[in-house]
Structures are given as C-alpha cells and as structure tokens.
Length: 522
Image (cartoon, rainbow, N blue to C red; front, side, top):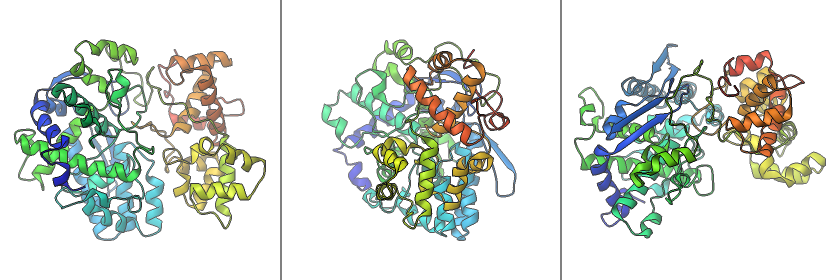
C-alpha cells in the first residue's frame, strides 16, 4: 500500500488523522507509572494535551559512545541528544561498510532502549558481513519521504522485526520514521477506539485496516484496549500469526504517515521544537509526537475515562493497579509488588531441550531453523527426542527470539549456553552479567530463575512459595506457580544462579542485584 492510498480521503485513516489533529492538543490524561529502572520513583501526573505529555517524558537510559564515554539521558531534551548521536554513529559506520563499528552502534541503541533480544541476529549478520547491506537495503522502505509501497516489506526481506530492530531502523532513518513498539502501538489502538466512540463510526471502520498491533508488557500494565473491559476492539499481538514480522515493519511506516499527516494538519503542534540547527525540523516534530504516544501507551488506563467518565476507578481496580501514591523502593532494579504479570513461562524441560538442540546443530543437518529441528528430532528417535517432538511448540520456548534466540546463535555460542555456568550465562544474556528487566515481555526464563531464587531464600515450604508468587502477581494460580518454579529451578541451576537446594548463589546476587525482589515478598 502506498501513502496516497492509505491516507485517501474516503478512508478511516484520513478521518482518524483529522480527528487526532484536533483532539490531541486538548486530550486529558492521567499518566501513572510504577517505579522502574527507567522511571525511578514512578510518575503520577494529570496532563492536558499531547504537548504536556512530552513535558513529562521520562526514560532513564545510558550507553557507551564510540569514544568509550557513558552517555546518560532521561527527559526528552537529553534523549534527543542521545538519539542524534546514536543515529549519526550508525549511519556513518554503515556508509563506511564497517561491520564491526555498525554492529557496536546497534548494540548501543539496544542498550539505550533497554532491550537485547535482537543482539544474536545482529551478531550473525555482522559475522556474515551482511549487517550494513541489510540496513542499507531496507532503509528506502522505511523512509517517509519516498514513494514507498509497504507491500515491498515482505517476509523475505524483513528477516527480523522486534522491539530492538524497530529502534535500529527508526534511528538509522533521517525522515522521522517512528519507533513502533508495544507502547506506541497500544496508544494508537486506544486512540482509534476513542475516535470510533466519539464519532459514532459504523462498525465496519474497525476492520478497515486500522487495527494497530501491540504486545504484552513486562508488568501489570494494559496495552490492549480489549483488556479494559469496555467492549473495545483488541490490538493484534506481536509475535503471533496476527502480526508477522513484515506486517509489524509495515506498521512502522504507516504510523509514520499518520504522524506526518497529523502534524501537517496542525502546524502548531510541537512547533517550538523546530530549530535551525536540527537537520530535519519536521522529523524532530514527528519524533516528539511518537515519544508522547510512547508515554501514553505505558498503560491504557490513562485514557479509560475518554470512553466512560466513570470507568477510571473501576478499570484500575479491576486490573489491580493501585491508585495510591507510588513509593520508590530501595533500588532501581527492584520489582514492585503487583508488577510481575506475564512471568509464567511455557513449561518445558530446559536442560533436555538445550542439549538436544546442540546435538542437532552439531549434526550435518544442523540448519538453524525450527522446522528443520523438528524434522531432525523425528529422524533421530530416542526418548528425549520423541518427547520434544510430541510437545514441540511448548518445549521450544527457550529457543525463541524473546528468550535465548538459539536459531540466530553461532554453534560455539550454542555450545557455551548448553554448557551453562558463568560463561554460558554471559552469552545467553547478550554478553552481560547483569539482568535488566525490559519494558517488553522477554527473558522470561531468567526472570523465573530470579523469582525462584527469591522465594526459596525467603520461604521454607512449597505452599508458602506458591502463595507469595501469586500474591506478588507473578502467577495466577498454584499450577502456574509450579510451572514458574519448575523452569526457574532448571534455568537457575544450569547457569549457576541457584545451588543444589535452589538457593541463590553469589552469581545470583551479582546477576540480579541484592534488591531484585525488594518489596515483593514482605
């Protein structure tokens, strides 16, 4: 689809952009963020209009620049400086064809963004000498200033798309292409639902190409309008058949078109951000609107009253987000009670799956592909292989993109992870011996190891451990808590995070930090 077709005057996108240009400047919101590493102390603020949202922008991040200096940012002004530096670094490296330097710049972007799952893919591309050509080949398709047809973004040329790669493609671009993560998608999905409600649009608009996809949050936030219980249309989810990677990439471009259209309709919106020293003043306004959507999309309950004035309190109570003032806990890495949602993995025999996957990769048929692995299991029958093949989808959970991404790993990396211990943990965690809980639902296996260590250290019996995991929101039932601890014990002992009695080791304290579970199991 081309921009002119997407924004045709007879379509819902055109009407939605017109509504956004008028509604966003006056939109009342209640931004309420729990304490986290990225927002220390949390946030609780009533704001009026999208420009006031940007004034409350906060994302505490850091990365090491090309000169070895640590760059820190938090508000929008410092974040823009970081993004300028990261973009210039990446573009210069790619233009020079320097695979090592380009990959290092990409890793710095992931560090800034608090995500790491794309790192094995980038490493593989770098080792193949293909990372720079890959970015250059896709760059014109993400540009908002070209006559792009999003149908050119396909499953063949978009080899990976996730919360890390959207940041890399957006920061590599110079035209205002937005970072499209679960927050931005959630904000647009909710705003579109409000648009349908306020304009009393007929139901057919819901399926008219504007079902903005989103994804699960790490903690107890709502990023799908359907979860609010107000009868709103749901957002198709990332990492599912509803949103394959190339469709996610297309939404990055289409969202860029929407943002451009809104700002063209309302020239006063973020006009103060345009400056002579900015290489592309209009792109600066685009990123400002994107950043504001990012803040709105943290938790859609901030917009619940736009649908129902009486919904706010009921929705917050139903979804278990406290309306009391947020108190900071002792350490920025700690997890607050009630923010452990989405911590239950798909249960699987971790060690068995990893060892058999290594055997598969070491064979001559070791093509790093899930379907090929299943075929290998079938062709090499034994008890372990038969069990994995029979339960293939749940058992390969740790191999996936958001966990240890085995399919993008080199054989040597797979061997190190399969061997376990400190070096295996370092490789599995993207080269670091520090656990960082991202804003997205990823690294669930390692999270389980951390939670399991916490409850085994604090509680002496199984019933108490399960009760505490349910109380803190990590699990919703006793069977779910059992699944969480089963995976946590296997992963924790494999990497030396837990001892033979499943108690935390010195490595556990180093990796998770002393206050990992502060305030969770009091």
